[in-house]
Amino acid sequence: MKALRNYLDKIKPNFEEGGKYHAFRSVFEGFETFLFVPNATSKTGTHIHDAIDSKRIMSFVVIALMPALLFGMYNVGYQHYHAVGMEGSFIEMFAYGFLAVLPKIIVSYVVGLGIEFIVAQWKKEEIQEGFLVTGMLIPMIVPVDCPLWMLAVATAFSVIFCKEVFGGTGMNIFNPALVTRAFLFFAYPTKMSGDIVWVSGNSIFGLGKTVDGLTAATPLGVAKVAECPAFSWDMVTGLIPGAIGETSVIAIAIGAVILLWSGVASWKTMLSVFVGGAVMGWVFNQWGPDTAIAHMPWYEHLCLGGFCFGAVFMATDPVTSSRTENGKFVYGFLIGAMAIIIRVLNPGYPEGMMLAILLMNIFAPLIDYVVVQNNISRRAKRAMSNN
Image 1 (tube, rainbow, N blue to C red):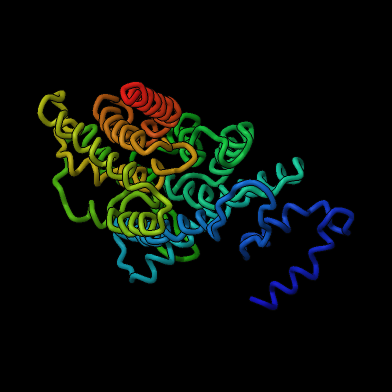
Image 2: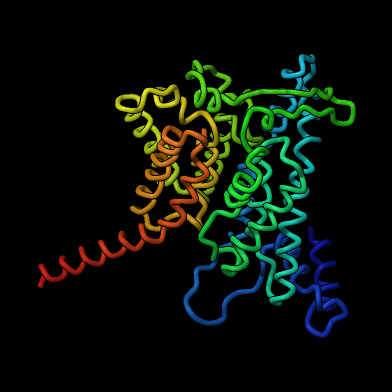
């Protein structure tokens, strides 16, 4: 690493003002700070000095996403081989899923980071690191058969209109990855819903085989139109049709442990999402409409769809979620409750986590405002009573 550090120091003058490649200064700084902790320190004022910067935080989140991503790749292959009636080894199934998911990751990062680089150059600022996580989240929350050009259009829309128009990373009010999925859902609904989008029916480099007319409904889709599926451990392990990274509760739980251990995510937000979902699921079990999904046990609601993934990786986004400690409980509880309400009462949409989080992104500042004002009022009353 010392040799790399010396090499970067040697070529750095070329990227500074007046250097041969000064137009690419933000690109060089982004690469340098990704590899090494910046050695610049504050000169005046009061600051907290810490080796953990935004890039390190984003890196922890990416590491936490790896179990769900790797399992999602395997599950893509497993669902394909199972649907077409073929036998395949673990390596074959994983290789199929890897080759199916990798292009989506590449498209997500190339489009998103490309826009971020262009904006950074135009504004003469450092490249913002927020897309390190967003670029990984986007491929994990879309169906495996989502066309790459649609993914590129949705990613560009999200980065431009959800982040850059608000000022970039840290200024956006909506979660960019969820905006990408929402754009796809409302602009291209046939590619984001139904039975045929969740399992890949194409042969990839000789792995598997192509099948026409493939159908593989998700358990939530079945509950929405037919009957409540019986609980099985496949709902926990993740060997069911669904979005690439959202099916395995176990893999997501490993990611949750990493986020909580590193202090990146708030346990208050995470826990309250599950509590809100469980409470609302129980309420519908007792007094809900006479539909299969309303009578689905609350624990199945928490296992299926994007509930766990949203609670761990989306609701805990430090930029778009509530930031006050008491507000995190309210924010998370309302997300969990609203997700189940949308699932049960919306006849055309079996999932509810995406819309619930985006809705609460709007109200997060209001929740924080109310909490802060209550604290101010309480302290003012305490001061008056002491006098």
